[in-house]
Image (cartoon, rainbow, N blue to C red):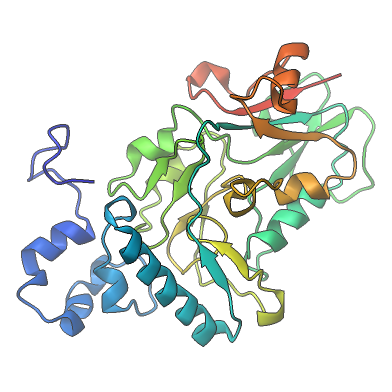
Length: 311
């Protein structure tokens, strides 16, 4: 990210970011005083270290700088939770664009995908958060706004079907377009990511997402040390701080290493299909070639990489 980008707004209209602030006052104040001086603009209510506040944008970090950031985050995780974790910075796999499909004829609303996401991605235990919502839908309708997420009866229910919804990893993601500090972007493998260290918590992306796929951390997630998943990614499932946005990232700490998303592995009905849309021999490509697939809210032009079909 560059402040000299000719497509950027005029200097007077440019959104405030940590880099913009640093140019104005970072050289005037010492590092210790810098964070305190701009505390009203911080996206957390808890204290942020000067080193983190001065961190450059993810795309501007060198390999060595990223390694140093990760060392700091691992040390902070150990200090805060007492659990040793490994945070990696998995890069997109060349020649890969990930896609997901769900066979709605097989999904029975059991919610195992929701539970697996909750555990894999170190979600807050108090709110039982997850990136996945399973909507109980009336047969004959695909209006997700009329779906029920609070059903507590035995499933599947008569005249109902079940629609799991998570981030659609859009090719035209409105959430990315509205972020004033470029804390969220689409990677080469199709995954829309969030840098929790750069997010200011304005929640514009949450408002822009037509799939209600973004989550805001109103408080620091509570995850008991013994329940923390120590296998973490910088742009995926590391424990998020208070005051930042998060979303499904296709378990990139797994999928970029050749594994499957946790939600797919947990599905007991085989309803979930995941793979490389650029590989003509992949399962996901077979689905697109042989099934009549649909996407949610196609009329909006978001071009999701998430598909649904019935047998």
